Figure 1 (cartoon, protein in one colour):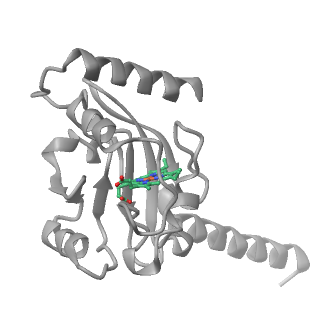
Figure 2 (cartoon, helix red, strand yellow; figure 1 turned 60 degrees about the vertical axis):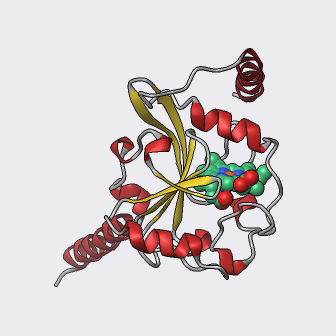
Length: 197
Ligand code: HEC
């Protein structure tokens, strides 16, 4: 083989290594699209948050969510506390730094869901906070699920505000009507979020 042919073979090998690395990157495969997300209150409630399983094994996700000493959530688990943020569990080994969770920042409207940001270590929410920085502080046995008392820094939203955001998910068809106080709280929340955008 002459030197030019050898160089060509070498470059083909490195090209194919490059593309298989790309395929191993779960965000590049884009398997999860905006269709995965829907009205938060149509998901299954667990204490204060909601879950589903995009691979069809809701039972396994519920078992992990209700394990008294914590558990590793199964592949396909979708977890949400508010309509605009989600965590999805990818296959084992997909992203060791995030325990295989992919973080999503979503834009929700009556038309549906649009993915505003997605990824692993560098997704930042509307309040300027990095998802992983906070969620990684949960004790290991909770698999980066914060709730309260798992070790994460608190979020600047009271339980009432969280319930209000869940009640007003614009993708839901049966949203309850709001009191004047709730409307004022909601407006203050929207302003706090847009001030950061
Ligand atoms: C300031 C720290 C902080 C940041 C930043 C943050 N979270 Fe959280 N997150 C929390 C805390 C604390 C809770 C639990 C709140 C509660 O239950 O009252 C939570 C709850 C959640 C839940 C429900 C399950 C759970 O862990 O309790 C999801 C899903 C979630 N966050 C996703 C995200 C995503 C996605 C981002 C980034 C776009 C993000 N979070 C950014 C602290 C944070």
